[in-house]
Amino acid sequence: MSCRSSASFWKSHVLVAVTLYLAIVDATATCTVDTPDSIPPGYTSYLQKDASVNLYYVRRDNATGPTVVLLHGWPQNWASWYRVMRLFPSSYDVIAVNLRGVSPSNAPSTGYTKAIMARDIRALLNSLNLRKVHLVGHDIGGMVSYAFAVQYPKRALSLTIIDVPLPGTPAFDQVNVDPRAWHFGFNAAKEFPEALTTGRESFFYSKFMRELSGGPDALTPQEIRVSVNAYSVPSTAHAGFEWYRAFAQDAEDNKEFAEREKLTLPVLALTGSILSPEPYVFFMMQDLAKNVSGHSIDSGHFIPEEAPEQLVKLVTAFLPK
Ligand SMILES: *[C@@H]1O[C@H](CO)[C@@H](O)[C@H](O)[C@H]1NC(C)=O
Ligand SMILES: *[C@@H]1O[C@H](CO)[C@@H](O)[C@H](O)[C@H]1NC(C)=O
Image (cartoon, rainbow, N blue to C red):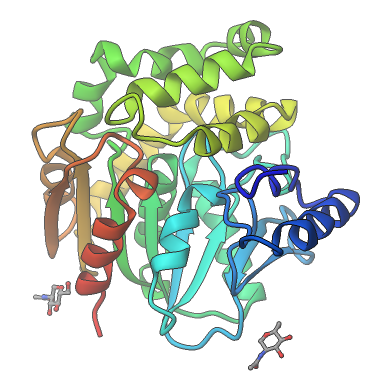
């Protein structure tokens, strides 16, 4: 059993955990287990117990210092932040969450607008007794982070939004007609995506990720496998499509949010320059917030995996001390 594959059975279930434990024992003779679907060293996974929608999250052990909440995109889960979690300075309390719908987080039949998904995050923070946090969101997680910051400004210390257009903005309308965003329409269709991708998860999710990354080898096979495994769970795949089906409501919500006073918290807007030469996230956030800084990162869409060093460097330099 190789080091890279030994932890690939990790699924957060007890039986599988035993397998993982045995795999670690097996692997530690020659090397340490370090794959993007194992829990990173110095972190522990939890399933929330006290909310109407309980979330799965991975948190740094013995956390002190400011809390940074990492929210993933589609078709991904907490593990998209694996490298970022390993690189993030230990002076931060880092929490990576599986969004509503992504197993083992609960997958209710409704409630996939980003405003409601942000409520889940607030409920989790309440249960952890965390009052104010820094939000870092990629893709769908960026939409949820914005919805959190705009609905609960007293709970958000800063917002880092990574490579995503927010529904209801001109940036979204522009991306929406880009042929590379064909999945916006496909995923939002009723019934078709579930019917056409069940049993074809490996092709669908791997090809999607390869096409939106910065090159054929920008993502490792392990990173892609994490997504294929996660979205081979039918309730997770369905929830992922529901996120897109909610975009029309998200657009209405965001237009209403935008009519309020601009966000005053510091915003860091990051764009992957390989697919998007224009820093569109920066321009978009300037309409929504007063204090925005922006950067383009030499990466495809999957910045947390493709450029983790640069991402952590930019975020830690930005976070107000
Ligand atoms: C860190 O946290 C773990 C898990 O909660 C605990 O078992 C351990 O004793 C803690 N270590 C220190 C140094 O506090
Ligand atoms: C803008 O945010 C930065 C942190 O990124 C902070 O240092 C600065 O004071 C903020 N400026 C204003 C005018 O609030």
